[in-house]
Image (cartoon, rainbow, N blue to C red; front, side):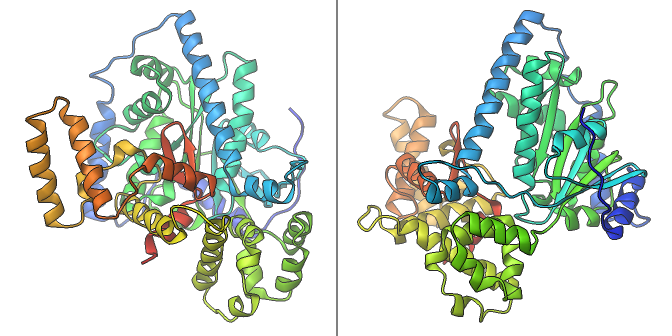
Amino acid sequence: MPKLSFTPISTAFVNICNYLLSLGMTSGRKRHRRIGADVRVANRQEEYRFKSCPSVPISEKESSRYRQQLLAAVGKEIALLQQQSLHAAVVANFFPEQQQQFLIRPDIEVIIGKAQRFRLQPEDSIVQVFDKCGGKLLIFGGAGAGKTTLLQQLALDLCARALENPLAPVPVMFHLSSWRNKEIALAAWLVTEIQSKYGIRPDVSHYWLENAQILPLFDGLDELEIDSQEICIQALARLISNPKPLQFVVCTRWSDYCNCRFKLHLHGAVLLRPLSDTQIREYLLTAKSRELWYNIEHQPQLLAVARTPLFLSMMTLAYEEILIHSWKRLTEKKDLCDYVFNAYIRRQLGREIRQKPTPDKIRYWLSWLAKRMEEENRVEFSLENIQPSWLQTRAQQRLYRIGTMLLGGFLPGLAFIRHFWLRFILWRSGYIPWNYRRFLKLATQRVFLQKTGERYRFVHRLLQSHFAQLP
């Protein structure tokens, strides 16, 4: 493996990481009783996990066939997400013919144990850090800092390794906010997710997990409630303390993890730093956005927004919709970010002069969808996720009950009837379009959503939260 280049890093990061890594699974002296009760429940669930579904050995031929299926599905999923990313939209807009690849990577500070502390050089790969950490890594960063992008790149590197080496574990990405029922053991939830997303039989993925042939890449820990984060961290700790411990990676926000009482006992961590002035300038000049750079280079409050890769990409795409004089009059960071979101939404909705549905309807439907997803703390959505709880009034709920009873008496297939009737009521109420699938495709083309399989997600959780706040 190539040697990593070493550069001194900030003392604060080193000290805090040493503290976090040394904590292991210790907690503070005071604990909330409710958290303690939840943790005990989680402990009991994990203790008896899989007893109702014992691991059954599978043939080498069968395992190899499913392994190739999973590797192909994971690789396709990540490729689709990257093609539908904001960065890909910047490339497509400014380099439509050459499709020139220019990618800005934030500075990455690394700490491994108590001995090795350095800044990752541009020529170095995150998979090298992963290997030096013994296959267990924490990725820290702020909101929109590029944690998920880095995790996807690591996943592709690990997929390539698994294709070359049949003994290497298969990387699979999981979003922890989807683990809503904490009474289900984390390992059992992983099996369910692998079956739901990739069509792998539960007994096969169960056997893989028991034998450390799956490499989970966890995103979204910081999107759980603080109590749920505590439970999740303990479940992750038990997962890696099995007789055959798993390799794994966890992404989370730096501040959220510091506030948790429980910590993972890992060997290393990385921190994504905000973009520097030089990195912002190089990105904008490469993207032929020289005017945008000249307008923000002497505006500290605007540069502060641009230091986040998410907003830098949005600013580049939506510059024509940004009125610099109006933008720089804002003083609060949230207002400055909201201004970028609104400019991006206007720009993506105004790409066609004559369009159906109208921009106002698209904005309203996306806002309504985001509100329902935020209420349920979801980051992924499929048509099957539409629930009766989405009905907003008692009259709508009563109409739904009456309709399912009446239609169910005349037509077979009660589940289909309920789903159809529910969507009909939502459409009649103006909450969703008649052809929802076509609308979701349109929203994906406008780079509001990303699609993998039959699942959709907003291009970033911050954009989902912003849509949910719109009237």
